[in-house]
Amino acid sequence: MYAVAARQRDAVVRRVVLLGQAAHRILPGDAGALVCRLPQYPGARWIAAAGGNYGAGRSAAITTIVIHVTQGSYAGTISWFQNPSAGVSAHYVVKSSNGEVTQMVRDEDTAYHARSANPYSLGIEHEGFVDNPAWFTDAMYRSSANLSRHLANKWGIPKTRSYIRGHNEMPGNDHTDPGPHWNWNHYMSLINSGGGGGQYLAGSPTDFSGDGRDDIVTFNLGSLNDAYVATSTGSAFAGTSVKWNDFFGLSGEKLLTGDFNGDGKDDIVTFVGGTTGTNAGDVYVGLSTGTAFLGGTKWHDWFAPGAEVPAVGDVNGDGRDDIITFTHDGQGDVYVALSTGTSFGAGVKWHEYFSIAGEYPAVGDVNGDGRDDIITFTCNADADVYAAVSNGSSFVGTTVKWNDFFCLAGEFPYLGDYNGDGKDDIIVFAKGSTNDVYVGLSTGTGFLGGAKWHDFFGLNGEITL
Picture 1: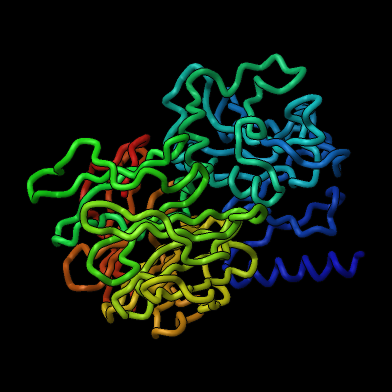
Picture 2 (picture 1 turned 90 degrees about the vertical axis):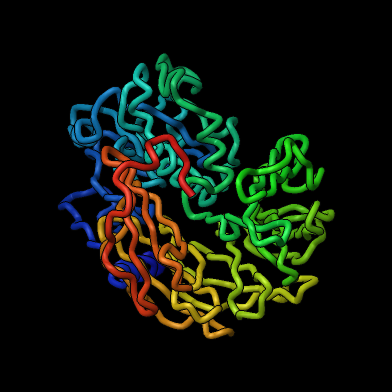
């Protein structure tokens, strides 16, 4: 058993070296000292809680995630959990201003955070106060949603309110957090849509009518699952509640857009996801006629299952958008299924180590050759941006850094051609206290340093695309 643990530990250390993360030293006498004290959640810091503030191991399976509010500062909470006299802890603490995550107790150990629920739950503390909604920033919501989604996928926890609960909802507790100002609808939407980061609407903005003007689309999901479009006239979006499809995209599915048959009109695609059930891993496409979307047709029967992150782009330059999935696990594989115009072909591995959990992958043509490439933003203290360009049959380049300081934790990166030279550039919305917007232009082989293009745009709580 120790040999297996040693191999796993060595694999983790090798991965840390590859990613440039710093290993944290093992304290003498620390419980479980044979396990390298690295955060289990990529991008998090590791600061251990005092040994008496949690229990080693668990007496029950993990089934629940508990949402807390600290009633204090981020630094103060971390310091308190390190205090041997505290008698309390949580697995993770999330910072209000930028969404930074600190892990203090390993998932497999029992944090003392929810009384009788301790043995079967994971605790996430959020910096702030229940009676002041200003603490609940967009950066915090998105970062925490990423974390909760990661934990739910890792431990097989359903992403519903029955299993992701407030401290006040746990049995035997007299606490009120996260309180009336915590936006549960927004939070659960981020968890289930992937909007907390990692999922990029590669086809948005998008031209559904084929007239050269980009249009807008909304999917209402829920019980109706309708898709509505308002087409652009060049000076306004026309139409009021024009339904283009009356059953497409169920709750929990991942919706994207792209021109999958190469006719110049963008279509809609939904990834069912999941790993069990009749439709798990299916991919459905609704082709655009220019005035409506046809009924959803299955184009692939196993792609982007589970927690994988799907994307859309024309990676072989044939004029038809293809589908891409980032496995977002320890392997970091990237698979592509090329469009034939009527279906997607078999999923083929195009890259074997690119974009792990906690990073932000994106798809775009960064070298201007007509084929879409892959990019990943680490969005941590390193703030690196890596790219692998398409040669038409694979993505070339292993950990080729195109920028060494762009997008910190809690910021929101995207791709787009901002100077009109045919090469996609990188953009980041800093939000926080400055709300600055920075752009790094592509040279075709790298991204230039970030230059401020706007000094007040995209506030906390607003959604930037």
